Length: 396
Image 1 (tube, rainbow, N blue to C red):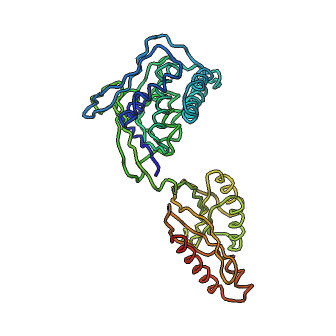
Image 2: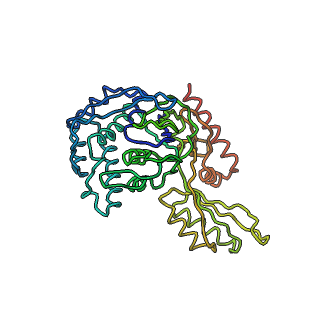
Image 3: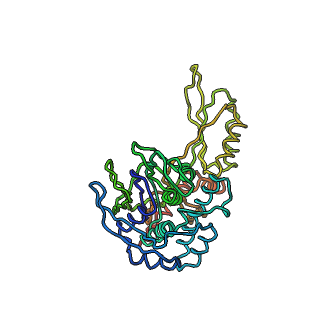
């Protein structure tokens, strides 16, 4: 069973909203405060209180800083704070990863380097508490998967330590590259750089909520109380038994109607050598009523460039298209059975402890049939019978 979180960002996201929603989900405030105290920061007090935003009851997480003059910390300063704290390695790694993303975004916006960047707002005590607190929370709640809705980022301008900036702030835009966002109709900043960094660091997809079983829901209140919509972040905790069977794959396609059919076999062989998971061809009716072929290649993301380059070079296509698809795959393993024709490997598909189906390996059956001078089907049936007998013995 896998536990996940869906960030429903219909009113944006900020660090305090994220921590507030985690507390609303059941994160123990005392345990959170105790771990945060090991950071060695001084001059602040933590509070958690009930709040109402519109018609929704939520939890407001507040960091009251006693000292208004906070130092402009560098990435190395923040890394040192986190590394010396009494936190788990996972919390430290995730927290530092968020700040590294922030540093990269700030460096690009200001034409600097990540080591030279001065954190202003996000280097203050409250932002450090928000980021590290969020990572502590997801560990205590044992969350391992993260998805997010499209994020309402807002519009207009915002006053920062760098002066007046457009909304979303330049660093926020950098952090949310690849995420689904929209402005919304209300003026103001709805996604802060801290919120953007946390969501961008954790979430593997942005869009509709995946098909899962909802376990619980938490609401984190923002500082402002808008009249137009409840200023809350909703975190939906879910359980997903099939997560371990799901991954992503790139689908690369091209339509061809002017290539010698003899070349397809060569292209298929080269594609497998380049890392393809599968290659197949589908008859297609092309323009001008010409028969053609839809050539499709499945591959992992790291092989996308080599596959597309291969198709451009080895086929007559003028272009390829590709997109990411989510696939659910069964757990697969190879077992061996002894038959009167020798050892035969069996490919077994499983879901947890349940066997979905099995199939004797073709090459093993074909070789045994040739050596023993019997039919392929006879060897296959013998292997299937041996596997069923072996499975029955194991159950007993």
